[in-house]
Length: 362
Image (cartoon, rainbow, N blue to C red):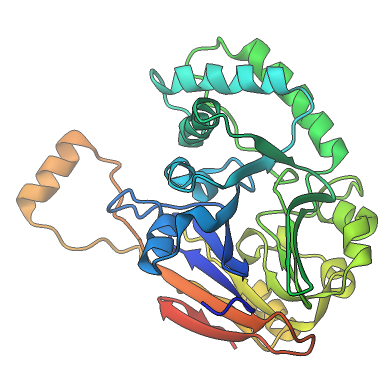
C-alpha cells in the first residue's frame, strides 16, 4: 500500500443489512467507521475486508460507532476484539454512570424479551474494553479523535457531532427509560431524527473528507446538520471537502443546502448506501437532486430489490407456515466503492473503482 495514497472503502449490503467504511489514512494507518454483517455467515464485513487485503490489524487505530442502530453496529464487537490497538469511539454522554446502568439493564432484558440487538453488541464492546483495560473516546462536537503526522503531512480525524444540546436531551431520555424499564415487553425505541449520529471530518494531508453517517436535519440550530454548518469551528478552519459520504441513505431528512454550500467543494465525489426495507431510499426525487450537485455519484447496490420471493417446494413452504409465518428472504447485495487520492498534492483528483453490486448513478 502506497503510504501517500488515502483510500476510502464504503461497504454496503443492500436490503437494509448495514454499512461500514474502511479507510486508509496514509502511512499504513487505518480506521473503521461502523460495522455490518454478512447475514449468511454472521461475519463482520469490515473485518473480512481488512483480512482479504492482508492488512495488519494492529494498524487499525480507531473504530467509530456513529450511532446505536443495528445496521451500523452489528459485528462491531468482533471487529474491536481483533484490532488490539484501536480506540473505540461513540457518542459522548454527560451522565456516564446512568448510561452504563441503562445499557446493563437492557442487556439483561435482551436475554428474556425482544429488544434492540444493538444493545447486546454494544455491551460486548464495553465488556471487552473493561477486560482489556482499553479506554473509549467519546465523540462530540469538534473533538479530535485521532492524529498522526508523517513527511510533514497532518492526518486528523474529528467528530463534528453530537452537539452539547443533543447530549443533554439524551441524558434526560435515559433517565426516563431507566425509570420505566420495568414495564413488561417494553422494547427500547430507536431515536429519530438521528441528531446523535457521529459525523466525521478527516484531514488527510492536502485533502478533506466529510462522512455524514445518518445525521438528519432539524429546525433547531442546536441540533443535527444545522449545528454543524453554523457552529462548527473545525468546519470553518479547514478547506472544503472533496469527498462526501451522503447521510441517511440519501433521504430528504439528510439533505440541506448549507452542507453543500459551506462544507463541500463544488461537485464533490459522493457515495451512499441504499435502504430497501419498508420504504425505499433514496427516492427518485433525491437521486435527481444529488445528480445535479455532483458528476460522480456512486451507490453500493441497486436502488430497488425485487420483493418477489423465490419459488420453494411444497415441503419447504409447509415448514415455513408451521413454524414461522413471518420469515423473510435475505436480500443481501454486497458492494464496495473504493476511492483513492494522493494526499501530498492539493489538486490531485479522486479515482474510484467498483466491486460487487456497486455502480455509478450518473
